Structures are given as C-alpha cells and as structure tokens.
Length: 270
Image (cartoon, rainbow, N blue to C red; front, side, top):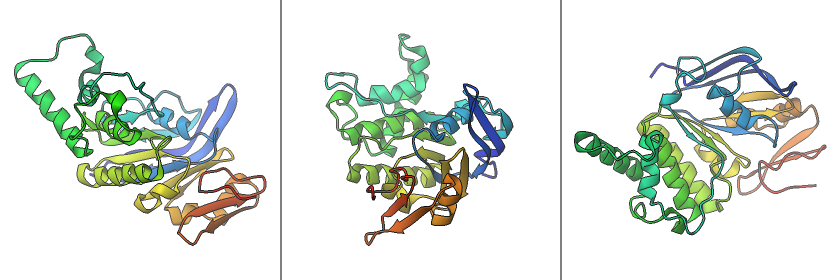
C-alpha cells in the first residue's frame, strides 16, 4: 500500500510543436479519489494519455504504479470518453464486462473448465461491485445511461486494477446519476483500494466524495484538496486573470471571471 499510484515531477507535454502543459508536479496516493478539472483543451485527457504512456513527456519525469508510463498498463483500468450504444445493440451487459477479461481473444471460444469458472466468477463479482446484477443480462442498448455507465466501470474493474482512469464518465448523465456514479467510485476506492482519476467538467456533483483535485489551466496545473485548489487565489494564478470562486447557498461552487471562466463549477454567470 506504500506504492504511489501516480507521480509527475516538473513534467511537460508537447503536441504539434505546441506545449500543452509544463512544470506539472502531482502525486496520487493509493485508494485516493481525485478529480481532473479544467476548461476544454487545457490538457485533462492529455494527462490520462501520458499516464498510459501514449504520449511521451517532453520534460520532467513520471512514474505509474512504481514503473514508467506504459509499463504498468495491465494493472490499470481505463474507461475512455463516453461511448454510446444504439438502442438496437443486443450484446448483454455481462458480455460487455467479460470483454474486459478476454476482449483480446475476440472470436476465440470462451475458456472451459477451471478457467471458465474463474471467468464467470470474476465477471459476476465485478457486476455485483457496481450494483448492476439486476440488469446485467439485458441487452446494453435497452439500459439507461446510468446503468450502461455502471457496466462500463465494471468492465474497467474486472481485471482488479490498482489504478482506474475515468475520462468524463459523468457526461450525458442527469444529476442524480452523476451523484450515484460518484458515490460508487468512492466506495470502490475504499473497498477495492483502487486509486481513481476522474476527468470531469463540473465538480459539484462529485465534490463531497473527492480526496483531491488536479486543475489544469493556462498550460499549468494545481494539485491539492478541493478547498486548496478551487479558490479565487489559485484559479486567478492559473488563468493569469481575475477569477472569483463563489459558494451558492446550496453549497455549489461557481467560478466567475473575465475573460469568462470555464463552465466547470455550475451555472454560467455574466
């Protein structure tokens, strides 16, 4: 449990000759639930790709589960940006989850005997973990967005990863489902001892569940607790412009600024 999940030291990434972000230092501890925030194009998904070793650093160093990026991917569960399923998609939820175990052998018969039993057991455990047992045998196209997302998270968890990367898993979900997914992720962190990085546009539905925040803006990043990072002082420094963080009566955070602050913390304000 002493192994750091993710560590970046003065890291930078360049794409197309342009620096996406630089001088980024951050640490994600085991079983920590961290949100990755910031405006579109700030480099949130770039961080995920750098962790997976899909984008090399142009400066600095990084380690993921104690190894170089890309070398520990077998111990990482990854859910890309929101996938949509046509209403006519007939693959069952449990089959979708099983692809997380044997998807690399698509078209090859399912294992038999002891291997078959282990596969069935692990798929069932992952589905139970996300609370999807009641509808896992139904076609995925018939399920609601929240039900589909739970099964996709089960697919990412089925190999028992120590790091879970979720790229905008709350998009297209209504507020109750966003909160339900956030509560589910927090429980997974605690029960399975999995570190989670969740990319999000709006922090409010998940704010009360988080251990930490990584906020990208202006080619830089700030890391810490939500109370440390989502502040007038910190965001003004990142954006290089006056930014004000307000707390509504219901506890929501609203970011106001000129130039206009990104829609990441609630309703837009002029």
